Amino acid sequence: MTETEYNAIENCMLSHMQDSAHDKNHVYRVLNAAIDISNHENAVDSDVLIAACLLHDIGREKQFADLENICHAKVGGDMAYDFLTARGWEEQKAQHVKECIVAHRFRGGNAPQSLEAKILFDADKLDACGAIGVARSLIYSGQVDQPLYVIDENNNIITDGGGAEVSSFFQEYNYKLKKVYDSFHTTRAKEIANIRQEAAVDFYNALFCEISENYKHGQVTNEFS
Image (tube, rainbow, N blue to C red):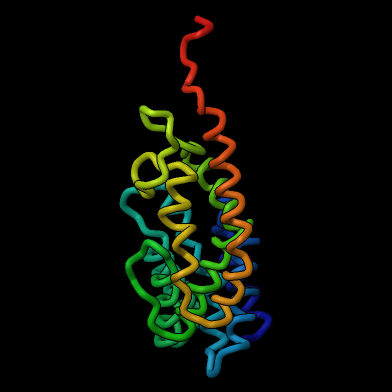
């Protein structure tokens, strides 16, 4: 890929980055991880991979405008295809980039098929691992007004049911962050994820213990009224 083409794709990405949990730095981390992974694989189409990494989250704006009905991976794939073909990319290459983007979402239900799609998926999921994955999850929860935790009638933290209308950090951790370590396609990504996992587990357990300790005598609701 030429520097001119890279700059054009990068500028397209930058024009769509409005989400602090999925900002330009997230994109650059995904790109860096993808290049690392690709160095351990054979016959990777670097143009497709770089374009897919840079453009994989450009549909986030539209998803935020309609969280119930729009998938950023699907709409982002269409946006990337239109952008690249308008720049003169071959239809087959632009379609390949689109397919990579459509398949990168953990909840999307579209498993990555090509090597480039698997690398993008893995690189993106690495940014949901370890300490940075926890930090990004907490940022995103704040953006969409999700609580840190939800307790039941017995003052126990609810840890299941992630993806529901009201989903806390603990629910999201058990719905996605805990399971992401089993979702990788490439050996290199698995190696990196395994190194990062301990930090996420330690944080989750420490936070769970601290909050549970706070509620061990029940929930005070009207003592001072």
